[in-house]
Length: 348
Image (cartoon, rainbow, N blue to C red):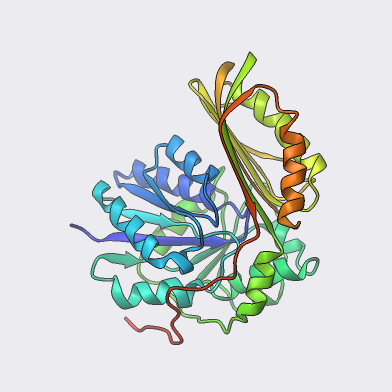
């Protein structure tokens, strides 16, 4: 069996990782190549997995912890995807995860290069998030360390932004500029990371794991999904828009919010990275109304988990329709405990 590329795409919550992966996957398909993806989350019921699969991308997921704490699960997910004979497997770690070089890249370099080819770690940077550096010490801790260990840094959402902040973590980094929505820079980025010319895992950080645990635990993490029967019939856009608006207006401290609704007629996914953020919307806004909906919500907020859940349940009570097969989990991430952690860069 041929060796698949593993292409890790990191970055803080809301940086646009899944959107870039899907744009890159379409590009590969146009070239006659087979892409796949592994998505990752601290919990289950992932909008990103549903979105990737609705977009036709073969996908697996690692849930219940980040790739570093579930390294064996990550390898199992990659091995399962090999049944598709993919040319490229994109790997998207949890948006609050850092220390990937020591816990993922070096173990892969040490023990898996007989089965996979490993691309450099790209870390996406949302310009709006970068402009907020200095406003929240916990978010800054995670955000800056992600950038510090990157093999390649890429500002995302360049269709929306023209000003790109400078700060200490970017010093000495090679920077690229991408827009997954209009395609700017995507083909060049793909060519570069698949060229084999960029060394992989060049940096291993000195991570304060107590500080890391505190930074992650400062975020409330909510995942919810349900089947919804509504009368009169609504389109996905008619359901998603007002519900997301209410969540933005009533839940303080939103760091990243995603909602996806699927009906037999189509789907709509919307996401925000702050309470005042204009939603980014993908899918079929013209999908016709339907009575049967599959709804999924992922929320990350700078709130205690109990407070986040209380706010969400309050808005859930106002959601019209009969809910079935409802699932909700809300928590703060547990302290990270990597399955492997290398102290030195592995030479290949």
